Length: 547
Image (cartoon, rainbow, N blue to C red; front, side, top):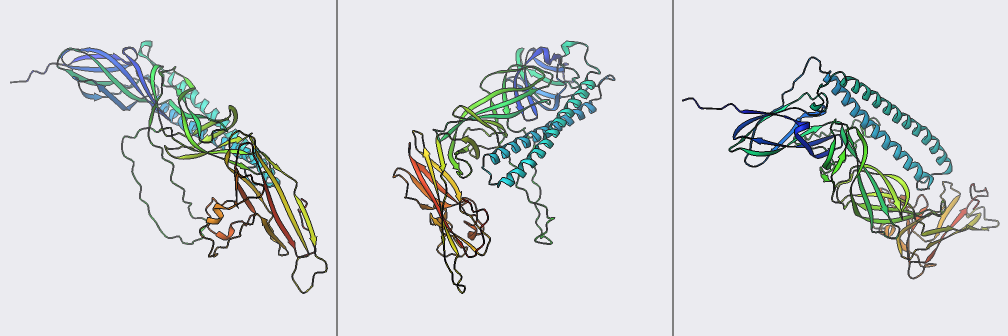
């Protein structure tokens, strides 16, 4: 007996007319679109075909169909139809690929210009230790380098516009004559079967990938100088929709990274000997690239994005992030005290790298850049000048003590200069502050006939083999300063860079720089005093010693 297999009924749907976009998941360079269809099915098998209404940016390799209980899904196919009058899709795809690469290059160039601006601002603010001559050279180099990057940015923008014109020219060469067919040049249809035991009303979701949609992160960081435990982060998505489809009142998610269909492959790692230990042509070893945790973040409200939307900003969320504030002052250069925060990502989501506006006490401070940060990781953020802390660099005093008729047979100093540099730091706030680092230095010399000795604070010059100097403990904790310090405050003196990893212990203090790490009570002042001696063993005049 021959089995009776009735011919499946056919149902043809138009994606643009018979469904609604209900959800969008945006990734940095693509998007997943979910359309919801409603249809009536008879019992048995129904062959469904979605032949029209799909956008030109449709990616047939990323299809997912979800059906409800009681419905069996099968025979999913994506046939591709091409007419003689179709555009050269290979050429169009190549143009889209070229545009994507140009846009990535443009974003990199913009990040470079932002990084240059931030470094230049830090240099002008005295955060980078440079002599006036070095600052002038850097600014000349900065002007030349920034002009080069600006020119490259404009060149890339021009190239992107030219590619857009070529894409429009290719796509406008032909298209569906019926406007109800939706966006132009939908080449791919989707066919599948739905089987039910009884006649029923069915809803199913079709999810497919599209190009020409993207997002990148932007931030606002809000800090207050009277709260040194947290900052508020406004996480924003700047979104783009050029898919040919409007997104109206949809649930929007943003993904930190595009999903992968297969597991990543680990490449082999081979070690070998260098031909020459000091080989300058050896390939440098770069640290591994930062890998962000793949996460999708749902926006709190539905959103509407028309087609051809460029750079619309939506707020992902506001998060209170844990932070540790520190303050830094170099009073010889500037009396301003600069606020810095080490921020921990406690938002629950990875932070995609992006530019940030920084606000302190409601005032805009600067533009900054937040790198890619996973949950629990930290990043540093400059918060500008703390107006509640003032540092005064008083005139330096120098007392010369000449030594008359030194013996020609004894190596003794011809003159001794005793120098004293007072500094006053005042906390005008109604709350105490801690972790204030004041940086100053005594001179150094490479002359054999000049000797310089630090008098106050009496920090020790360690030696690499000094048996009593264990693991930099004394250098890291410093020594307490009592003179001129109220009992409600505390000050520790230490050598500069003690938080860095030193491979040579004897280099500690070699640059003459030292720090005071201060905690100052509300409405209090502290007086610091840096004292040193210069011993001269020659009758020559000392250069650059007019204090």
